[in-house]
Image (cartoon, rainbow, N blue to C red; front, side):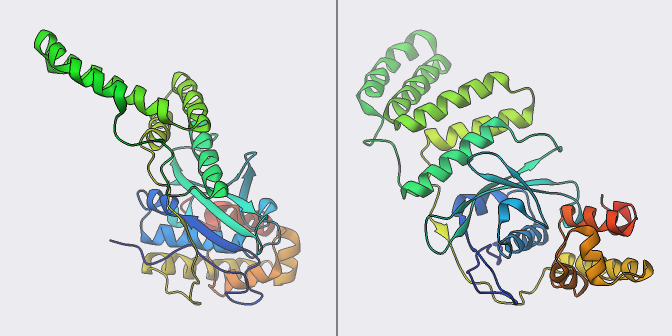
Length: 312
């Protein structure tokens, strides 16, 4: 089922004081996130991205867990509607164009809290390069077809087939095609492919291998990354029922614990390090808290995280 929600916003949109950044998302990023997120989970992640767009410096977020990976940033989240899914969303801040934009490069599901695989970093770095160079959606391989060298190999395939059978002939043809494709890649793509080959040697588990192979295929197949999409979201946007129930429960719980602690929203904001306006929106059910926000609130209210988020 096609999801209705897009993570695209424009500066000045949304509830006051409005968004401070545009948000655009590569088509490939949206497509890969929908492979492991259901509608409620996708909506939840979208709300976290929208919250980043309210902050003056999303690279040092007050409400989200954001890590600097060098050439781009990583948003980490888990728990709540995500359940056991450990989500990583990769983005960078495009400050060169006016107005500035948060550009979503991709997303993955992690099985644990460990570091982001090197293959994923290489893949996101390449997508950023394509975005900045204006080459999105355009194949980077020069020429078309399998090339002369591959054609020569194809001519030899009949002889190999007669001597050794289908399997060896298929292998020779596959090697020829891969060799030809690599020769036609841009220099930067060949360098990325070489780095991925080194990551392949270092891969120690199935998850790491899958990321290496996915990144290699994206380069070898020259699959279009897709133009970045930007659109205005109507406010308020109807949440999926599953997420609405969770937000209703946790917003009431935050207010209940704050009242029990005899604290005002301003006092809770100061103690937790969160903006007072953010806490107000949480208690009014206008926003779903990230795991990082839940941890800050739990510490400020002197309760275990599980009391605010039983999924943790």
